[in-house]
Length: 409
Image 1: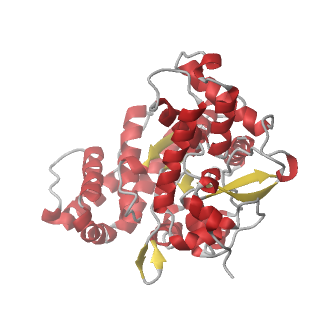
Image 2: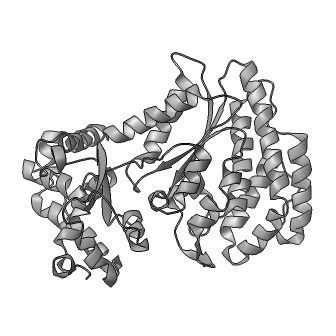
Image 3: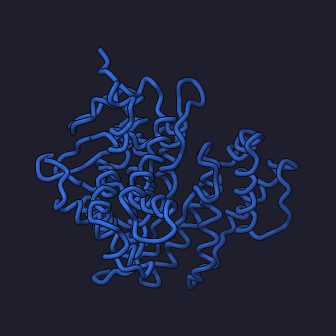
């Protein structure tokens, strides 16, 4: 958790110290469920609050709520970004800015003409039109490629028009005493990694092949990206573009110093208990009576491996085993076993010997594509204690195939 907070602070400092005329692009990676969205909201609040400087105008949107993360490409994202910028600026009622531009209107008319009868969008506002087109892209998987091809013909003009809109907005914001504009684009970390053509993956197609366009919007940008991308050979290309190294958000360290044992009184274990206490307080439940024994609490925290969402998932699953509180150790074990059975079904046979390598903390991870998948699918967790290390998801240790797997020769 400390590493996550530190990264959020680094982002805020960097954006505040940046040249307003040279927008920065940052990539925010981490395991699913580790708390990236929560930290983006913290970043948003910090940038808007600005106790010792000018506040920023921050637009936040989650692409996974509007687009299909199983198949997402740059034209989809650009259309959705146009929709969100229009919608959020209209809602913000920024003085001196009407939330549209003549250039964007012309490009929209051209785009509608190219789409023709493929998409029926009547005479509606720009905001509504781009929103409807986003919905069409999401809801028509069989004709999505065809729509993309047509949008692609206008992608350069559309990008220029969105930038014209952002520039007009920035001028209005500056006149109101704002430091600038920041777009926080969440949900891209959920983009499913699969091959699309000629050895390229969906991750390569969006983040590598189209990075120049992703980074060319006239605003400071923070994109969430899949953790496996940070470990790809192509990541060096991204770092050249953004001018900094990216540290993925890690799990909460439950071990002591120097990769010591997972113990009851480590700072990480105390942090996990604090999460449980906070959730009980929110639910107006007495923490001291919510769990039958301290052993139940410790078991759930250890089996989470320091993954906040897994901890809460186990608690909810344990509650489903009971008619009433407290949560017993037996219910906690059944909750973990249910998740373990799910893992057993999804892990490919050739993963087991490789997973066995992470029974003890490892300082490095191999370049094999399977290792990247293990990180993405939460089979292997990354931790940070000055330097990173990697370790098996503790629930996998309880599964029979893990113990019987032999290391590859």
